[in-house]
Amino acid sequence: MPPESARWRRLTSVFAEVVESAGYGQLIPPLLEDLGVFTRIGDATDVVTKEMYDFVDKGDRRVALRPEVTASVCRSFAQHRPKLPWKVFYSGPNFRYEKPQRGRYRQFDQVGIEVLGVDDAFLDVEVIALAWEFYRRLGLKQVKLIVNSLGEPDDRAQYVDALREHFEAAGSALTEQSRATLQRNPLRVLDSKRDPDQSFIASAPLIANFLSPEATEHFAAVQAGLRELDIPFEVEPKLVRGLDYYRRTIFEFQGGTLDSAQNALGGGGRYDGLVEALGGPATPGVGFALGVDRTLIACDDEGVFAAPVKAIDVFVVDVTGGLNAVAVTAELRRAGLVADRGYDNRSMKAQMKLANRSGAQFAVIIGGDEADAGTAIVKPLRTQDDQVVIARSTLVAHLLDNIHSEESDLP
Ligand code: HAM
Image (tube, rainbow, N blue to C red; front, top):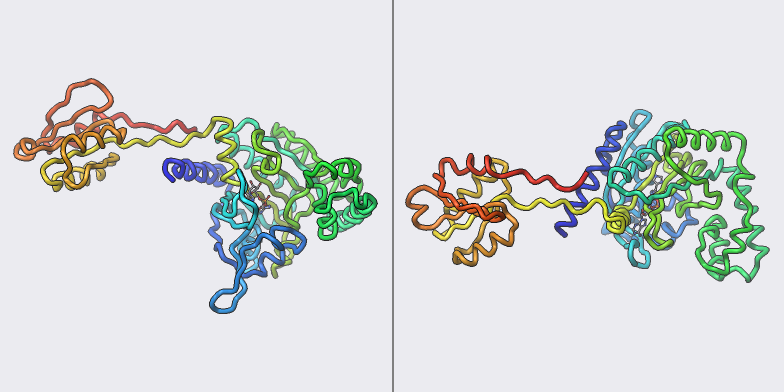
């Protein structure tokens, strides 16, 4: 709702400014995709198996409201085969059937970028740096960047085996939920926030010991690039992501103020096999998505990036029936002023009350005398200055001279 919606729009435009400065073009993917687009990103993730809004449409197609955008971007790439590298950004809603709570909703917005066709570790650095710059422009200071590498598919597979063995040895000391997770996706057990699991997570093997020399080198280059840009980060060897398509670099941005279950403001990583899984040629990919809802909660908590104040400039009060207000407001709006008016030919008192409440700098008042004389009264609403009578022919010029533009308090 306004005024929050204006802040929302401003956030997406700040994001667009940041990523367009790095050559990303906007992709507007559909909200509805063939179900297969998402089931192919992994059947071991809750996002796909439990949380998807999927249904059969009137033509008997199995479709889903997108739970995320990366798969949609890769589908679009596989279908249209744009030139490489393909650098795109997006913003919009996603749907996951989760338990709603502060910072976790069934419909939530993301802004994000994806790059297809580049293997370079320094691209991972660029991607991370753009998110970092976005947070900086919003004014957020407590965002923490954590990074990890999941290695090549073989490294990851060996690591998953080792994790399975480790957690299976814990037997029934592990929580029931984690035992169920272990069956589907041992990596995700590392993500458990439940107390009884913590000691087993602490003693779990580390991915770093399973990385191939190539993956180690790639990860080292990512870290060197981040240091080069003075972007503070922590390597979190037990960082895993909720989606299953990642290889090598993964990262997450954590807010300083949200509950730990909802403190991921955004995240991303490399997903080099995804385009292939969606029917395209083998193509490396990397990107991130940032949660808009959570980012704004973090902004509230840190007291930054307030809703822009765009009060109206002029409120037109016409007590002659309303036709004069029709003409005057149209003229003011054409001249670039923000103008509103009273309706229903209400009394002077009632319309002046609305004018004061509107926050306008001036009221333009047209009564019978003014209508006859071709004038209007201009009354300052925020100062004690006297009102003046101005000829209708010079009204716009007078207001343009006297209204000081009100910039929002945003960066
Ligand atoms: P994700 O970690 O599932 O990654 O979501 C990214 C962000 O979206 C989260 O960090 C969070 O801020 C927000 N988010 C997720 N679920 C919810 C929810 N239910 N309510 C509110 N906010 C939520 C992805 O979606 C990947 N596609 C990111 C990516 C892009 N990886 C590579 N490219």
